[in-house]
Length: 241
Image (cartoon, rainbow, N blue to C red; front, side, top):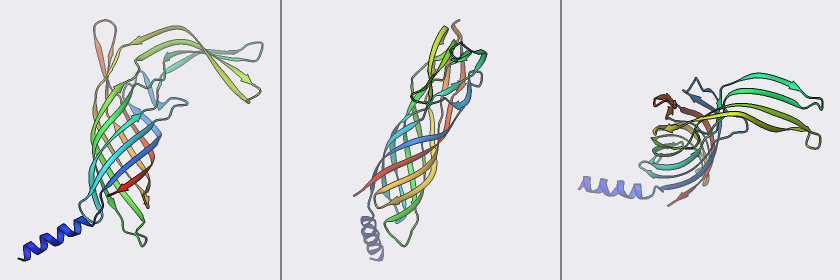
């Protein structure tokens, strides 16, 4: 009888916990690529930011602990290609020219991660304010975007008096692309944030793992890691039910 009463009490307690459906967006910072060191610097390219869209379903398994699953779409930043400056000069109009030879900044892949997620919420005097920590782990389905490309080009920088900035014009003299296949791999994220009523703000350290298989053009291929690590600032809305 005691076991039956205990089971009923536990079921009634769990029924008072609300599950969550979280829809969120995020922007990446401090992106860093590891691997392909012969072709990329490891930094992200200029004027390139990563972003993500995600949806997560979490179920309460205790008053403060939730577990669930999520899926997202992650648009990654460009990987900065290695280049050398062959020469630079000004013309008679004051325009600046830079001659470079090397690999282009490229978005090699975007990702669709499917993952398990766990979140622990901390109690506060105000029940509408919930600091939390969370962790994700899953599999990253990586979508090939661009091939490794080698270019010999000159970039012209023309000063725009109206906008007080420089306009860029590129002239390519030679270009060669190498077929590049991207494999899938591990995805994980760890971080924390705060939920105020139904709105969430969090900061996550995330990583997607991939390999780049590059066709040398002579019937052989070379394989390199192409893993992306970054910090993501995210906001979202949690539907409770």
